[in-house]
Length: 179
Image (cartoon, rainbow, N blue to C red):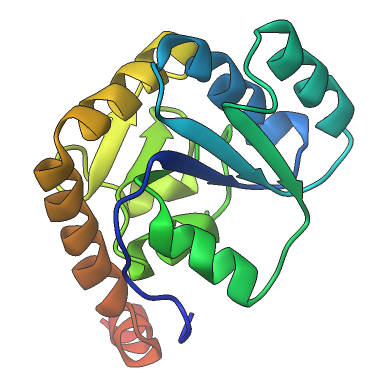
């Protein structure tokens, strides 16, 4: 968390997740069929669904030019990807916590999530620090397109997310637990 930092709002949306069914990376892959170039999708993670996701991206005519599967990554490489993203798309089903949300916010990036994503909804406030949409490809694509078309809005949402994440401290957690 201490190494995450803000950066330029690039031409890609970032997904950081295990490639497993509950993480619903397939929604992000499918959404890219409705997102025009130059916006791309960069996927960081590995798992049992990698081959199926890669095949689907190829079938949609999106890989490797528009969807880039990077595999498992850690450290500075991931920090750099967070810093350069337009936004982070994180739409798992009923996630317990969703640390990816806080990582995105600490990098000053807005988060696009789904109405049934669970933990991320504890942090993402629609229109304030991210966008919350129904869990379908067209709705998520519309959110990506909104941010791509309005970089100032993406910047505002990202800054609000960063402020929210910076306010989460152990002292704050203890105070809330004791209240």
